Picture 1: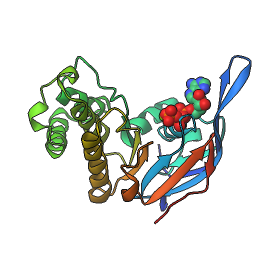
Picture 2: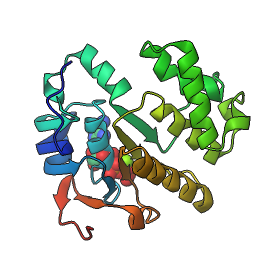
Picture 3: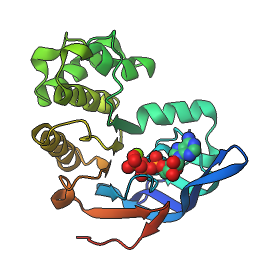
Length: 235
Ligand SMILES: Nc1ncnc2c1ncn2[C@@H]1O[C@H](COP(=O)(O)OP(=O)(O)OP(=O)(O)O)[C@@H](O)[C@H]1O
Ligand SMILES: [Mg+2]
């Protein structure tokens, strides 16, 4: 998988569309969206429920494929990737954080965090050390052996963030990461994503209904009924 030379934009979408077949009819998830996201940005993705935020993130993560249009992420033309290459892309290039955490219940915190690296073929010792470092940074050092059911919501989300970062992705996609958290834990998660963006030069895209991340955004993307509408704020 040879990415093109890295441009100033980590994401470039042209006329990006996703139409879901639904019985005899269709549902438009995303409708001819054009966008460019500069490398190193912290993007806040906004829009009412059903506006296409999760659809857009799933396309950028190569979890789903567009029905029309082009999408370039970190130099990879996602249309050109084979299934094997997409698997590698999902593991190494992007990290995803979900509203519902999606941790494996039978694995410990440490095992959940290490899994994507071990699946990608990383050495065990190096992976364990990196997981320890991440969990330290996230204030989770003393929760390493806990199972997800033994964690608070905020701790589950911090575990999910460590898991998203274990393979050092260039792009972190967070889909409503504070949706299941109280405002204090939500603020902590947003602060951690901001830290990651500033200190590791990692591009971060956060889809959210809340205004917790607004003051940190370098760019807003607003969706309505699957289309992009005029950005209301940019700095
Ligand atoms: N697998 C699917 N099959 C059919 N329609 C779908 C599917 N996934 C999403 N949709 C539809 O696509 C549109 C966009 O959905 P999406 O999940 O991207 O919205 P969203 O902005 O993430 O909403 P929310 O804020 O509620 O999470 C909605 O109308 C939704 O019903
Ligand atoms: Mg959604």
